[in-house]
Length: 243
Image (cartoon, rainbow, N blue to C red):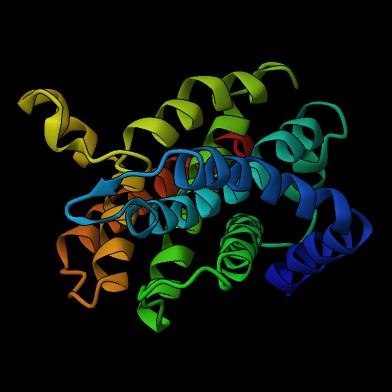
């Protein structure tokens, strides 16, 4: 019941701010598609650059959509509305509250990614997006929603959320195999970047879109991030409850 309650809250928020949420989810990825995809006519790995760009932008949209759905709102709710304190004294199991927040953020990210797929549908490509692609998008969303939840617990003020975006989300957006291949990066730096969750999501979605198998390594990396940050979030909440 606690999970349903949190998801209902996210749904009400989504309906209330539908146009704002949709515009926020679309404007930056669409600008990237126009500037990099249509403005720069080039190829990547022997294919039209758009074939490389679209899967990366889809993965990036799920990341930013999931992260932004949690980081700012949860920081404000925890610091000023004291929503977390209210949950702790309520009968709602804390793990259900955490899971509801993560699922709500992941679904917001899925919405952003699906909107990108929708607007790129008229572009004639041979890219394939199937059930496995959507599963990866959802898992990627859960990872970044969990990361956002942990960072919102660490925030000292509501102004910290934009800082997290600038220091974490923005660098990953450009470095993690989204707009340009990491093949030309220095070996050590490239290996570190390849272990970031967005790099693995981009790689798997791009492989599927080109008719290849996604492999299992990317799933291992994503679930490892999910387990680590999920454990941190649960530990923070239960530690605070027992103070």
